Picture 1 (cartoon, one colour):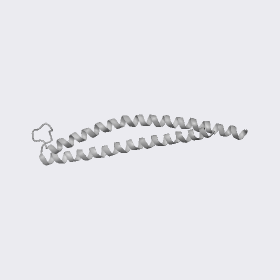
Picture 2 (cartoon, one colour):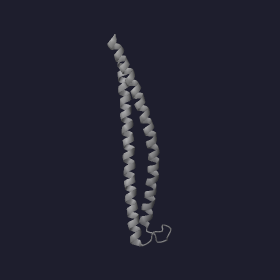
Picture 3 (cartoon, one colour):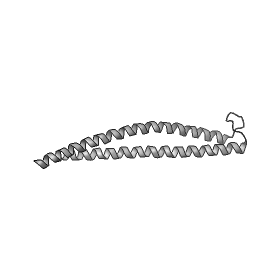
Picture 4 (cartoon, one colour):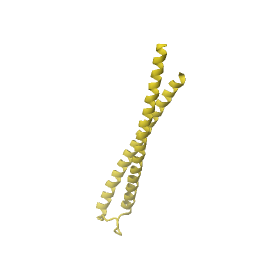
Amino acid sequence: MKSRESHVRLKEFQVNEKRRQLQQLQLMMAEFERMAKELETQIVLEEKKSGISDPNHFAYPTFAKAARQRADNLQVSIRELRVQQEAAELSLEEAQSEHARAAALEERDLAVRARA
């Protein structure tokens, strides 16, 4: 019976770990979004300062080009993290389901032992 109890604890640990991973992904996405917004603001300021807003113009500010590339890279990373988030959410649901099954078996075993 101890093995079922430890199995329930293992499943609970796995659920907590999946939650932590999901939270970590959400924090990273929020941070990347904040950084991308900050870069967009810097790009607009640089374009106003130079008077050139066309990235293909020969005199377009180098800083604005680099910041635009970095912002684009962050957007790609955010999209990739969203895919990972969806997978993590599915994995969490699966782990929660397994934990619920293990807990139900443990509860059933305790009830059987109590009647005996």
